[in-house]
Image (cartoon, each protein chain N blue to C red):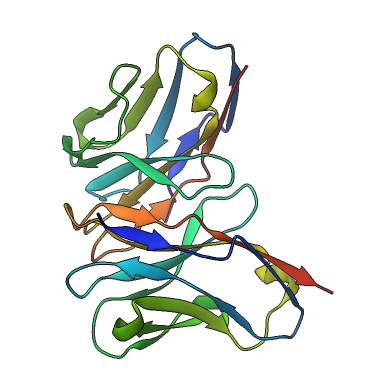
Length: 114
Length: 115
């Protein structure tokens, strides 16, 4: 079955430090992949998406992600985090049985150390 | 452009009671989703509508959950009777192109506590 795995439950980084959040997927064909962010008490907001083409995609708020087929990964990165980046981050991909059914990973909670 | 609207934001009920959540998607969005997000977990799709037809409801507990999308616009998700394990945030999302090629726009969610 299609799955999205986020191995890190909680990550803490210092403000100004770089960030990488991991995401692994299982999918037969070239997947569409997404990263969403959820601030406390809010709905999810799309950060970036990969459909095809360039494997390095840029998103909002200075985030980027790189699709690596050989590693089945789609890791999210940011060179310098800000305190406002503290949130929950979800990787997502379409379901195998239905391409329009979006499956979310379990999420990684990001805390920022002052 | 108005976003996805959901109500109520918070609801506390006793087990075995019923509850209903309402969602108004972004105008013109044909696809509407209801997700259940239990604390500490990622959102789980309950049901997906395309206009007023159901595309996927494979993970909807149909013995207690029901959903409808009136005239292909607003949607209501109902739980009757509620169980303790239904405590979660219920997220509504909409998309103009279907999730695989389009962005999902989420509402702020309805937080349900079942006592």
